[in-house]
Image (cartoon, rainbow, N blue to C red):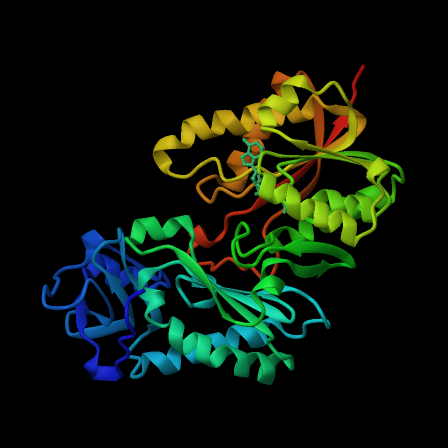
Length: 411
Ligand SMILES: C[S@@+](CC[C@H](N)C(=O)[O-])C[C@H]1O[C@@H](n2cnc3c(N)ncnc32)[C@H](O)[C@@H]1O
């Protein structure tokens, strides 16, 4: 990881940016693209803290990465004299915004750009937390964050942090030419690798050191509540949880009174966490079937019908060039998932691709259901949980879409 380079006020080197970038920063955009950087100083390190300037005016302070297409990220807008102070102020404000948290409640404490802390995610799984840096620039500030986080959690959330994992292993770091690793900052490694996470009374097991995301999909919390309401009114429902990971949806359904859940995921590691979650909730094996299988292979062979099908695949749209191919994959997945529904069943389907708009998502669902010659009512539309807010000036911070489609039969 790059070494810390903290400089106050005027000591921060200047990065001149174009007029277009200056206007965007003034309008609340925190990214400066590499072709908007007017001039680079070859004497400076490839990654450094800086002030962004245009026409003799400072637009903001943040960090610069010569290797990244998003070359500049703004941490403090305007003429901020002390970047470290701004970082800690934004961190405190993010924590205050998450209050009050119920005892034991997990939450995303910091959601990157949306909390004016570009490249930084902090997820809280009491009594532990994960600090995730997704950019080489944020890496410069990690030592200060690791030092201050326990005190801020104690002061603002009134809780003692007993373990902290540092995750610098996200795939986006490849675009930053940043090394990828994770490590324990403090606390028991065994506890961090098998953390107990509770959501609305359901127990999950999460690997905070090497599990997907920071270990758990906190962003689906509010969408899982729709599933809970649905299943509660249909005791004994048969559920299919596609791309289940550690069982976020299916475990919830079982705890709300579903009769049987079929879990499908191709990752053995995910299914190991699921198994631990099933045991933590004392679910009898007779209520579950676990398929370690590729989702399309499973759907091609499965003859069953379900009252609820959940489809929560990984982001198929990774970049604009692969949009058309990814749309086809979503459409196919949703058509096959729809075909597994019993009459009166509901398909709860998600996309976490930020390049796909909510309207495009609904449109592709429409095509999938039409292809299957079905009719659907949209009975639910959701997005990412409230602790993953979208910054209005940066639509890129909105990514998760969830829809509930009820099968209605017209014959
Ligand atoms: C977005 S995550 C699912 C999150 C999960 N539903 C939850 O609520 O915690 C996507 C999951 O899909 C799995 N996956 C990715 N590609 C797959 C495939 N082709 N077939 C089956 N599972 C796949 C991954 O292992 C991952 O667990």
